[in-house]
Length: 281
Image (cartoon, rainbow, N blue to C red):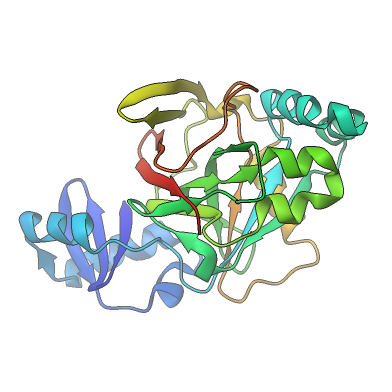
């Protein structure tokens, strides 16, 4: 099942049939056994005609977030470790990322409050004081208040590699700014845990020309998804649940940086495609 948050309410897509849910987003998703609850509620949900539902999604779509915080995990894929070591070599911090990759404790950091998150079709930003900027495509977990993974979406963890590479202590400035995070296009709620063979792909285009296009299965991740969620919830409470980006496995080459007008498409099997244009705040 897929949940789309729109300006006219929540739409549920189940096997191509659309239903309207007249519930507050936070109350709807922050529960145990979300799939089972939605399945039970289907019989009483009003049906929305396919053409009307697709019109809502095309023109009135919002990011699938209410009052949740967005967090992120770093250096969870080997390729991410390599990229971080490359960006930090001049500052002498390269060994730091190797140690994080092999440590028992994962790197977890705060990414965004809801007002800094954009959705599908909206503009993500690069910093004016940064010289090297990249998108980071990430499978993103929705975790309820009790620490249980209930759904998945696509995340774009926009990052300034020049700022982070200058000094690892600058990570918050490299990661946290207006429109530095994108989520969407929906919240995917499967009956079972997501298939580890699921493919994540990213394409970056400039003036109609494809500059980057690669894909990998999410099973390349070093740590189990449940482990990342458990560490996040060790000493933190989340009243409305939370979103956790699980790390990037696709990294553009070192000579690439985003520029305004670039288009980023991140696709994950079963979830869909998150499309964003790049700009300045």
